[in-house]
Length: 270
Length: 253
Image (cartoon, rainbow over all chains, first blue to last red; front, top):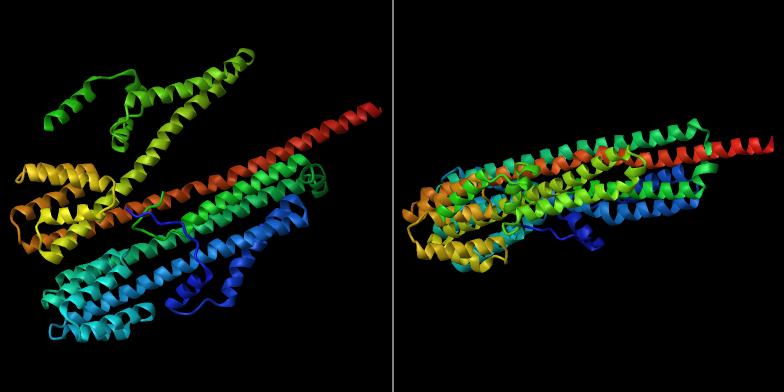
């Protein structure tokens, strides 16, 4: 049972995650995560209240929501996906090289370390150095530390465990390694499929929001905009009703984001 | 143990109480799964009186307007049904948690057996000293005690599977472990265990994905309903405005 702690990441952590595999975040990316929520929130608020200062306040709330919540979750998910892909590549390469029975283990390992990229490469090179000149105990410990680093990835953990046993006990059949690699590929596929499905839901969510806004605009215009502003939007009843509406929509939006940014397929949070 | 269970099932089948009849068919089972100590009758009574009191509270209004009876009844039924929905939601979440607990357990046992070639009992012992307090630890303690008392019995293994996950694959896994304990040092069984662990993970992964995707289904309603607030309030103000202007014309004329 794993309960993930709710945590907001600091800017340094975000930067570190985004450069761990691949390119650092561009300025444009940062802007995207502030500006789009700002505009959406401000636009909707102005439409309902017809006060520009209220639109500005809600826009700022939206912008900070995008900056403090959405951006961080997005970067973290991207990091985890990149790390997962990198591990998957390592397993596939390693198994491929080991199908050749004449290939020495250490040579296969160093070749894989060469192919790897980013954060994982550094870890593999460290491990390789330990493998070349250390006693058995240190080798076991080094493998354990690699497993600890990615202990949420079950198949990778199993694979490295088996590889570690091979290094210590000598080469055995790679049948189990092959199986574990296949399972890892399968989990990757399932996760990618899951993310695609969620994107479809995001599209649906957006269309639904647009429809409901269109509906409100339709009502507004059917009794002339002036009347809407005078007797509803700037009156007490309208203020209260609109505030309630906006807070419900914001809450639903947050709930949606919580589910949308939840990429994990091996754990449930309640 | 077996006799006790047999008695329980007989009791369930023969006695049909009022509370049993007004509850949903799988409610008792779910409550038992969530909390074996909770009394089914008490839960049903509480739930029923909650719904009934809502109806009773509406009685003064009904005296004046008999049509309200329908609304009050509908509301009472809704409240009654919501309790069931709540229990069902808990049940599903709990099921996942327990499957994950079992999955974690099976994986660790597999790695222990692979790593050290230790016996099954030793693996359990090491695991029970490491895991956090909770369902798994309690079940493991029970398993260790009954394994000590009845070394060659398969029943403790099955009980453990039922206590933790309760799924068929969990029982199969525990039976395989029992086989391994009986004819130890058979590596092919360990290989089989590793395969089972992964297959179990896949089943859980599929369930989790389905569960998480299903939760997106309610969003269209959640977005559409609040629009009604704006619409109704706007129409009411329009109506009031209309009435006011008519009065103004009448008063002026």
